[in-house]
Structure formats: structure tokens, C-alpha cells
Image (cartoon, rainbow over all chains, first blue to last red):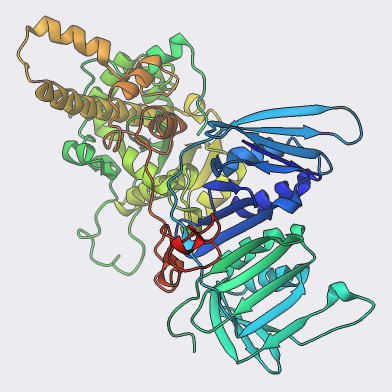
Length: 259
Length: 363
């Protein structure tokens, strides 16, 4: 049986909000170390990988490995009923056909309870090899979102180019072209605005902006985002939820004749 | 599309008369193929401009104009989910408008005229040697259900083409056709679709030589519009009949036993008919439900863009269609990079997630 109590319903709300437009149905795989989710979008271009470690919950209990097959649109409907600061508890039997979700208001004694029907989802898991990325960029998540939405107005795809001079997001569209360049930037007083670029070798890859803008919905989860690139490898965009819990997005690069 | 509620009386008026007169404006083959077409009646000789061939020296100046005419425009079958939407125009010499149409033949709004009366008026109009045939001309444009649906359902980014725009273009094409046939149209009366003022401006720009009047309820105000509405309505009724017969014929053929007694078949037909073709007509919705193919829906007689049809096909009994995602050739796939790892192969993140089996060395 599973019992997982989350101090802030918001964490799950924002996570589900961030992925529901990429994936419709997916399994929440629960085991004794936490709840994980891995799913590709229909076109197999993007992949979501979520891990909510047991430490994120207080308490957390999971006796057997359970796969909770959830329709994310339905889950969103249920989570909409939760206030951001409600305490959220998820419960399920060992071979569940429904997921029990409970919201407790911290202010008054209001208790909301839902049973969400589950489904059998046959899902393939992809093995994601450990990669030493050639470039790792940490930046404010709001900044990344701004870059993506701004460039989206111009073009469908963006070329991300990391060199020792900095990282350049550039695009070319029908009306012209545009680029944003960021450099290492660290100010002690405002660590939230830090931009950190670690580079072992120069990288240049092109990605579909539609997906990147979609990933940016996870901005609400974390102030900063980590972007990892290597030539001819999918891009990794990572938002840390809390502690070691994360929401990661992988995006396959565009191929062909950009140059 | 709004489904306007309709009471019993209206439904009776909208339901075509059985044995409706089939006017020459029915192009059977095109109707059955679900094509949009136009039909122009021959221009009565009395309206034609006196041909310049007889006189020698008027070649460079304007052709002598024919008799000044009034022209009315009206539509039939805007709301139904079945059958074409028909635009009708009707023209005749200005001074004849009132006496001939109103007094002699009692043309009125086709929604007021009984189906049988409409049908017989149309028959008179199409019979040579009658006064109507001698001095009046008419034309129709039949926008097929298939084309209406196809235009309306175009994706928004490729420029969808709504019903009003389709209707306006059909009207303009018809009037142009009459001008091209040498009729001297002086006054144009149009029953409105939407805003009269905007529509009037547009027509005035296209036909600067005519005096254009766009009005609500024009079909009950101007006799030539009433007559146009009769042309449109009878054509639509007949088209519906043609489509229905084709449907019914293929239906009985499919059923196998086809040669029951005459009387029996009549009864069955009556019971299974699609009525007026309006979504609010219970006969029509029952017919749609009975005759829906789970994948393809209906034939060219149905406007797939109508809410009634769409809902039925998408949610009530139609097969759910999963459209393939747009293949984007320029993007690589994640599956090109990451291998399926349902068997724990490498010690990667997700592979180890559920724990690796303890090897023999553990014991």
C-alpha cells in the first residue's frame, strides 16, 4: 500500500501542470524510495522524467512497487480543487483501481477527498545513459522562459550555441533574425539571478521552440533551471523540486541544414 | 452553427412536397456527386439588348441597353444539416414587377407559400408560353453540403471560409452572370444575411451601375425577391428529393430484398424519410442517427460542419479516430538516442530504479 503526504499540494499541482500538455496518460511508478514518472510525448521528440524522492513526503510509505496509471487531464481536474497550501495525501492499495487523494486545509478543518479511477497503461521505459554534458548552463528559470517565448515569436526553432564567450540562443524567421547571448554572471547579493556556464567543449544544437516553451511551464516549480547540452545528444532541462526531487525534460535535437 | 428551434407548422412548410416539380436547375449528376454548381435560365428575348449587328455604326459606342430590370436575390436552406444551400436570383422588367408577380401570380415569401404552391409557381415559370416564362429570367447557385462543410472546416490558419462569405460570393457570381448575359439590371434587391449596411456597401462597389437595396425580410417586401426565393426553395426541395431517392435506392439495394409491394415501400419511405433536413426536425436527427457510418459518417448530402453532425460522429457512436501526429521530418526522435530499457540492461538511472537483482555473489 502507498501513503504519501505532501506538505504543500502546490508541488504536485505545479508538476502536473507542467507536463499535462506533453503527456496525456502515464504511470506514476511508486516504490520505497519515491514516486517516479517517465513518459514521451506522442511524437517521441520530448521526454518527461519526474522523480519525487521519499524525503519530499512526510511521511512516505510504499510497501510494494505500484504503477498508478493516471490520466493527467483528470488528475488536473482533481488537483484544481486543492488550495496551494493544503496538505495533500495520496493513498492506494497494492493493486489499485483507484487513487485516493485527500486535501486538508491548514487553516481550517476542511477535508476534501477524491477517488480517481486508474487505468492500465502499457508504457515503454527508455534507458537514459549517464552523460557527461559538454555544456551545463544554470540560469533563472524566468530568464529561460523569457528567451524561449521571445524567440518563439520569430521562429519555430532556436539554435543554442555554447562557447567560451557565453551561450547564444539564436533564431531565424520570415521577418528576420534574433539572438540572446548570456555570459557568466554572479553577484553575491542576488544569487537568484546568477548565470553559470560550465563548458568542456563548444556545442551548437538546434531545437524546436514549441517544446522548449512547453517545458518552461515548470518555471513555477523552481527559481532556477539547469540546461545541459552535448553535441548529437538530446538536450536536458532540469528543474529541482526540492532536495533531490526533480522534473527533467529531454528534447531531441533538430537535424538537417541549419547552417 | 445555431440550431434554431422550430415548431410543427414551420417544419411542415420546410418539408418538401412529395412529387415536387423538378426544375431544370437540378443538375442531377452534379447534385449526386455533391458538387456546387450554378444554373442560369435562358434570358427571355424581350429582355435582351437589341443586338448591334443590325446597325452599322454603333460598334464603338455602348451597346443599346435592354429593358431596365429589377433583380431579386434570396436564399433557401441556410440552416439545415442536409442538402445544398441554394441562392436564387430572379429578374424581370421594372414595370412588370408588381402587376405580374404580386397581382397575377401571388408570389410571396416562400416561407409563407405552401410547398405545393411554390412548386406549381416554379413549374409555370419554366413552362414556355406562359407570361412568366416570356418576361422573366432566373438563376440559382447550389452550394453543395459537401463544399459548405469543406470550406467551413478548413483549418483556421489556412483561411477558413465561413457561410456568410460563401453566400456573398455566390450572390455576386450570380448577379455577374446575369450582367454578362446582357441583361440591363437597374435595381437589385437582396434579403439580408447579417448586417444590411455592410453587405449593401460591398454590393454597391461590385455593381456600381445598379441601385442596391439590402433589407431584412426583403422576400416579403419586394416581389422579385419573393420570386427568387421560390426559385431557390423549389430547387432545394427538388435537390433534397434527388439526394434522398439516391440514398433510399442504395439502401434497399443493400438490404437485399427490394421488390415488395408498392404500397409497403411508400409507407417505409415515409417513416424513414429525413423530413425537412433541419437539425431540429426529429425525423432528420433520427435519420442521421440511423444512417451514420461509424467512420465516414454520411454522404455528400450532409453538412459535416454542423454541430448536430459533428457531435453525432465524434461522440455518439462514431469510431474514435486517432489522428497521427504531424511527422516532423526535421526533428530527430528521442528513441534514436535512448534505448528501450524494459529489461534492466545497463546500470542507468531508470534501469536501476526498481532495483537490480542481487547476483549469486550475494550468497
